[in-house]
Image 1 (spheres, rainbow, N blue to C red):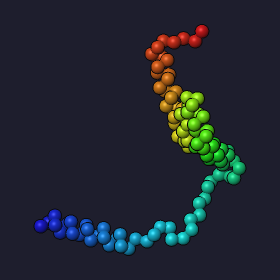
Image 2 (tube, rainbow, N blue to C red):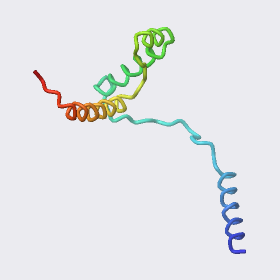
Image 3 (cartoon, one colour):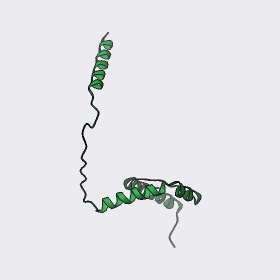
Image 4 (spheres, rainbow, N blue to C red):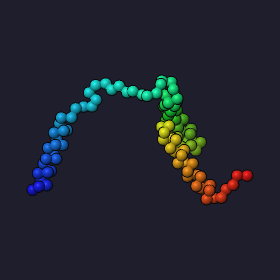
Length: 102
């Protein structure tokens, strides 16, 4: 009985909030970017956008795959994380192999 009342109360709360919910946003949003236009962050974002659009073009994607590449579009932060992960991975492999620089 206790669980039935609890379930009914929870269902009523969920139903009432869903019925009262408004479509978000109901007015235009204004984004504030804390960087100057044309600065380093802006340039990187624009380059990333343009290069991403070029890489996803079907003819270039086919050419890159034919050359053995794996085309992928990443954000600058995701690419930086990928590079850090690769450095850790390959540093371990090189260290375990005992390779030396001549």
